[in-house]
Image (cartoon, rainbow, N blue to C red; front, side, top):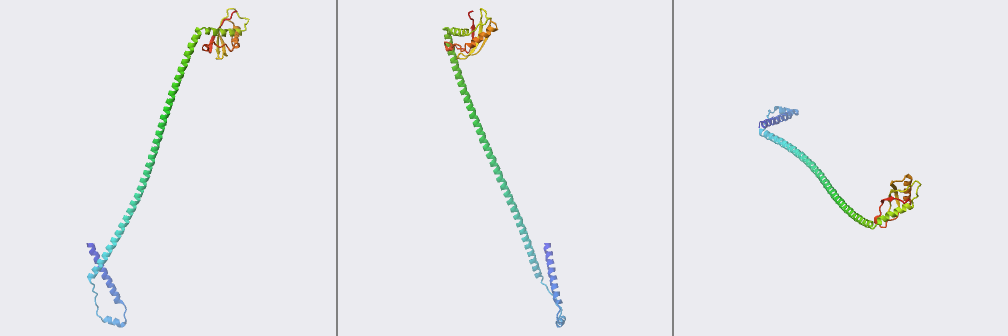
Length: 260
């Protein structure tokens, strides 16, 4: 309030000072001689300034000042509001962009996890199917092996039974005698041979009777006799076939005991 009174006083003094200056300027204008004389003769009059007018003018100027200050404050407030709104809008745009980018990253990550899960399930399913196929194949192979083994066993049992029947019928002795006779017919007696010759000859043959190998495992003859017997076996190839196929043996031992 004291500031307002001081401001009003200053305005009043300013107005009075301007009025005095204007009055001095008016009185100081050069006039024609006659007029100066007339003026000089006129009595000096004082200028009366109404204080109410001065106060009104001061109030008006103060009001203008206040309005100007208010306008500037409004403009400043509007500028700050606009800047704040712009900042908030920019922050919102940044936040929206970051949120959208995060959502996209989350979507990509979720899709990647989904694809990895699908791939994992596919691998596990293929692994299970492969394991099941392998187990099925193993069971089938085992079944076939067992079936073949049983069939082989049945054949062996049948062959053994047939062989025993053939042996009981004297067919094995007949078969051995046939081989010994064939070897003896192809034997060329060396000069070193002696009566009582007895040798065991191991022979490996094919089902056709063709001799694959021959070796004298024991013999009371000399080296020339042994070589002559081995040559006789090779020359006797193919050996006679057994009267019953069940009597065939790939490896057999023949007792060579010729009559000398």
